[in-house]
Image 1 (cartoon, helix red, strand yellow):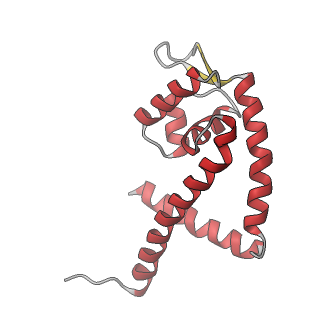
Image 2 (cartoon, helix red, strand yellow):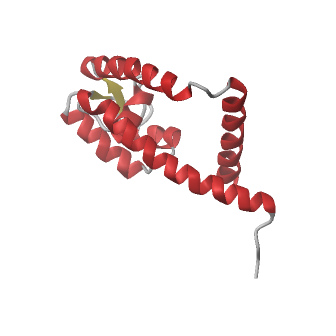
Length: 147
C-alpha cells in the first residue's frame, strides 16, 4: 500500500482547499456579475476577448477550459450581444470572437466592482504571502500541464 509522504499529504490538502476555493470563487463571481447579465463562466470567457479577439480554442487553452463548454458560452454571449464573430484570416472555420461595445461596457463595470471586492478580500494578507501562494499554485499547475 502506498502512503503519502509529508509533502504529498500537504499538497493533497492544498488540492482539496483549491476545490473548495473554486466553488466559493464561482459563487462570488456569480454575485459580482449578476447585475451585468453575466455569470462567472461567462465572465471567464469574456475576459480574454476583452484584450484581443481569439478563437474558441484559444480561449479554452488560455483559461484551462473545455472547448465545447467555451463554444456554448460564446454562443450565449453572442445572443446577449456581448461578443461578435469576426472572420479569421488564419482559419476559415474558426472565427475570431471579439468583444462588443455592450460587452466592453459590462467588463468595465465588472472590473470596477471586482477591484473593490478583491481589495477588501486581500486586506490583512501581506504581499509576500500572496506572492508565495501565487508561485506555489503556478508551479503545481505547470507540473500538471507537463505530465
